[in-house]
Length: 313
Ligand code: MEV
Image (cartoon, rainbow, N blue to C red; front, side, top):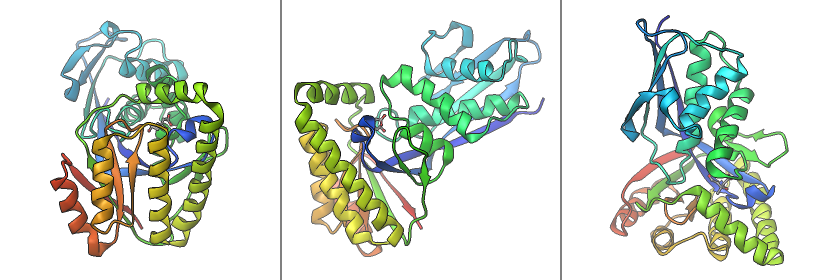
């Protein structure tokens, strides 16, 4: 058997994080500048069923069977074997490498799952269709993140900009013009599970206030969906910044995220907000070509550890 590889992108949420967990609309795009990559090679000296996992970024190199049962890589492999009805796969070595920062809102967990599921199913000669890849990655997300909406596995598996709403068919879309985003890392890692459960506790304590925040975010996602398709950068930026203010009210921003958002807006960004679960991680700024450089410089001088440029056209 020849070696097989599969790669998947990271992602950013343009609008709608957290509200999307409560079945409101959200918009996400893939980020190809960062990638998770899985390479599978045969292990000729090992018996069928033996699988060795090497996750370079986690300094992990162990037999699959020795990983904890709820380990996300183990789950991705076992769910794939189960979906394909394979009891004893030919012995294989699975090597995973990712340039997507962990716990930073860029979808690293879903990207690793998608790349593993694709590589394993292809290696076994039964590549799974995209909807199955996404559905299996969602199962992994559930044990890892608690109550995920499914947006991360969807945008990463489909590798397309999407308007996403839980329980509805996904709506891929094409932008009506050029959109350039800067993604700036606070350097603070924040677990999605904790941010999501924090929102849940506050929602339970004050459902009316949170339902109203979710509804307002849903409306912004709907408006931004129109603006993106119309190529209207100014209005898209405005909806993004309004979304940040609502996320602040939900208690998922932090001083470093707010500082980066303010710095971006003061230096000419069309819009800026935290992206992903918040509490740290990354923020995004929508910039014109004219202001891209000055906004990037401002983000760095206000503490951004890394700035990645991505876009839609
Ligand atoms: C995480 O990328 C986005 C959240 O809305 C969680 C989810 O949708 O599962 C915070």
